[in-house]
Length: 482
Image (cartoon, rainbow, N blue to C red):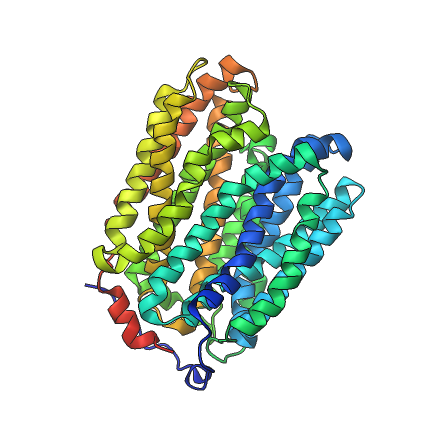
């Protein structure tokens, strides 16, 4: 049986909304900007060695090229979602695309590491307006009966960004220059903004005052927590700076929760967590990001350090894993209403866990690439089975009025899971004596990847508490029909 919530506030704009655009136009308008942002972030990872050479960036500055984006993104997600509810999701979505494009121009024109770090932070602010609102606009812009398919395609596009990001990065680095990875975004952003303004409705949430106190508390809380996580390995988890940031972040987070419980118009309505599907999906999503992306970081390096692959070759070798979600996610979206989101997510998480534990067992100095193909395929199918059903389960029992905030919470949880997973698995790797030489790398990577697999097992167990999901769409259809 599915859980129910207090009735969501009415949404007047829904009753007078113009006729919906064609299904494909809505899906494309909501998904393409997300693909741009996903692609760019992964392309950036492949560009780090070149940036080290061309800009003279230190190792610490290379980390900040990634961390500046992550911190700005994670700190601004919930505020962007709230602004979308207040001023129109399409409006804030388009502003997010524009800010991301401006950040891309600034990045391409950067001539020293400090300029690039600032530009990456600007991109992160733009990304915060793209990711959560993309899903909310998609969910509200298509008919309820076609929503699972739309979310499946959306998940496939996200998977495509994951898949081709390293490939595009490797190709650009070998045949062009690093500035091209940022110039590539500019024409996409220029075309995406008018397309989104034309194809998407400017849905809003409840017309309430913006929770500025909540925004002031949650943004630094998330930034402090994520920053402490990403610097923990370098500065030491017992260092004063890391501990101080963790404590300050947790105190602010506790204060934020207390404020949300009494605020008249909270940034994150705590009633959302009375919905079992919403809460369990976030728990499973955290574990999914923690185990999966922490392990991917180590496995890609394994191919380069141990197997001697170039960044381009390593990207090509991981395509059995990274391309699968592009195909599987839309299929999972179609199957979700028939067989349920719970079974798809549990199976997907179990497959992902099986693949990582398998890979941890076979990693060696002379492991042939052919031996890794089967677990790569299993991991890719598992990832595809999680992407779309988790997005459906997250929103299915919530009214459309809550979709932007719910998606914002989920994006924040996943971002913290990604940062924490990468940091913790890297800490395990370093604690086991890992270094960037073949024999020491292999011995230390095994336990780290194994831990990633165990976290995914725990996530699969947690996902068993999800509602079955077969009746969720009929429930949502009765409440969410525009």
